[in-house]
Length: 154
Image 1 (tube, rainbow, N blue to C red):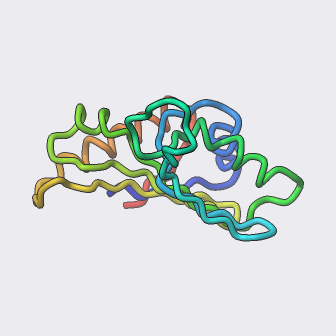
Image 2 (image 1 turned 90 degrees about the vertical axis):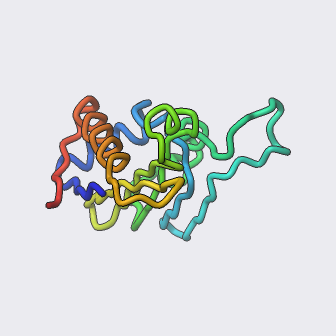
């Protein structure tokens, strides 16, 4: 599991990438907890009855949900708290790792600091951490590619 933080001016860069650019758009959203004037709890499960096309996925993409989240946090006052649980889509997970059921990226914003962790759900129990290492390396490359400096906790 990779544990990291983003502080000071880097928070602004991260928020720009998250809310205004397309850096995170392909990730699926498992759930969001957001506190502004009220607390919002959003499940990322797709409501298949709402969609016109036949979708072969279970979770909404960040690109689809982002405009709604941006509208909830617009204004002069920063959110008090938010937590977003992202994951890769099933097809990508299956192509990357043999034993991974899901690969997660957890992002928490509180007190103008962002903390994050990665996580791996395995199909079958194993003490091998190969899938964890693959996912951690992907996330580190993702942040570097997008110009987001993180402080990795040891």
